[in-house]
Length: 258
Image (cartoon, rainbow, N blue to C red):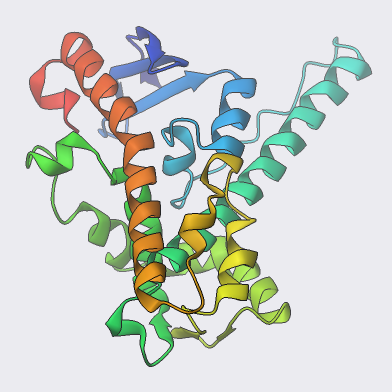
């Protein structure tokens, strides 16, 4: 049994949601959830317009199957539900591929990668941090500075991350982008052809030639990685600020920064 008191948030920087900050259940655990239209969800997953929903879904989630319809409804209505579920699944795969690609690109040009290896746990930390780039709550200390690390390195979490991303990393290995084992990836972070291939996996707004860099200049690759970091922060910051302000009015100071 769940007691529900829903606060309608008409807009989270462009995304219509209904957010509940005051839900309790018989398992004595606080639950915060949001309701969003399928179209808005798919748009954020594929375009990273706000990286609000897409960023949350970079991380392990629990899927709830809502496709079952009452027996009195028509087969056509049921098929529509199934098709929309398939659309979301396809958009989510695109979202995850973009997250891996962006995270690899973010490591380009760095001296720490001269041995051409990247621990998988570090890749996951980078992915988890994408949706916090430019988040005012992280910058002001209102958010737990160890939140990203906890999302990845808490006991039992790595298995969940592996389940999410293993097939994508295997596909990248098959295509020759990288090689991998259980602990690390091996790839040339400064290979321009590889960077061009990875950038094609990003949303259109982030497919900038400057992010790829120049084969004649390692500094240009580093600048490209920093440009991508800046572009991600520019996407996240307005939505994070909007969410914090709206959370303040609906849930109070302490909960608006959770």
